[in-house]
Length: 387
Ligand SMILES: Cc1cc2nc3c(=O)[nH]c(=O)nc-3n(C[C@H](O)[C@H](O)[C@H](O)COP(=O)(O)OP(=O)(O)OC[C@H]3O[C@@H](n4cnc5c(N)ncnc54)[C@H](O)[C@@H]3O)c2cc1C
Image (cartoon, rainbow, N blue to C red; front, side):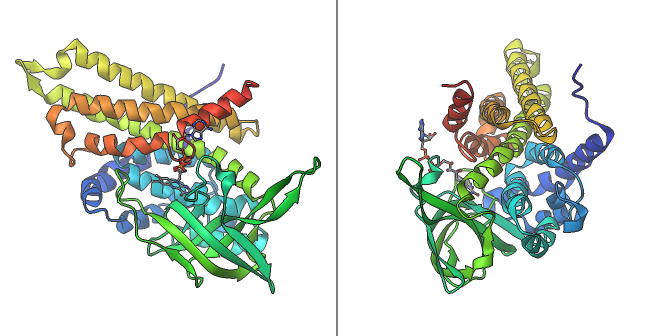
């Protein structure tokens, strides 16, 4: 029989992060959201707790945990604050993980200790103005000149790319053309490490987003950015494939984040339903409200099982691409549906920005878009069925 109970170490981590989220993050969430400020003081405390190093070995400054530990932490944080959770998710699974998975020993020694300790943040620059779901449409170029890559192009919507502590953006760029066996030509896409203090690299002004207001998101411009040839990450021409595998893992992390958002909505709505009076009774005594919250709880539970399963497969070294896509889609939709239902339970107060459910309502939409839209997940699932 499969056992979905958490082992003690995982449970302890989850409990610790839950308490931190409730007592340290939640009290300042509304303020950072309203003022669109990056929560440096929270990021620093998460770094001190070792959260940015969870899945990395100690030799690189990590906590010797695994990807599931990261997912559990993300779930607990996202219950109360999706902006803080995406800062951790992007910092670890998109900023540091590509270096860990594909870097040379030298690159790992240079970057991982600062990223895993949370002293610095890394970002992942795949999306471009004309290449999102169709990420192979990359137009950014990198040409080799006198032992240096010269990079030109633009990136769109890059998380953690412009904070005061951002030190690294890993970008995809077209480094040439490959001839296929059938004679057709395709772009050769590679990934290159770009320290953010390199001349020609610019994080342009932050977006004015619908949600995730306390997370850092910028368009980037790269104009004759010169970095050493040794900054190539992984094999030349494998950049696109490598990034897709990073996204497969990232979907488990995003599914965990979305599960946390869905669960947060259950908890806020349940508490409110027990207190709010209408027609002489708690609104939670009415079956219409009970059923709404019961359905929300079922969605959060289903989403959790889906990401646990994808993570278990990944850790066991089994194929997990389809299960990660399913988890990401199910959890993203659970978050959005629960946010809509939770605001309904809150009535007019649910429409007031300072209430956490209103924040979840604005924040959750991106969970159906970022790290692959729902349609992209459906494409992956359909492909696994041979369609
Ligand atoms: C807040 C935020 C943070 C982000 N962080 C990062 C980051 O750190 N790094 C990064 O690289 N990117 C990041 N992104 C980008 C994100 O991954 C993309 O926005 C997403 O992949 C969708 O790409 P797009 O916006 O270009 O939409 P498009 O690809 O243009 O899609 C538009 C619509 O068309 C649909 N569609 C596209 N193709 C098909 C098809 N073949 N069949 C059916 N439907 C289709 C899509 O599902 C979508 O509904 C972020 C985005 C946001 C908003």
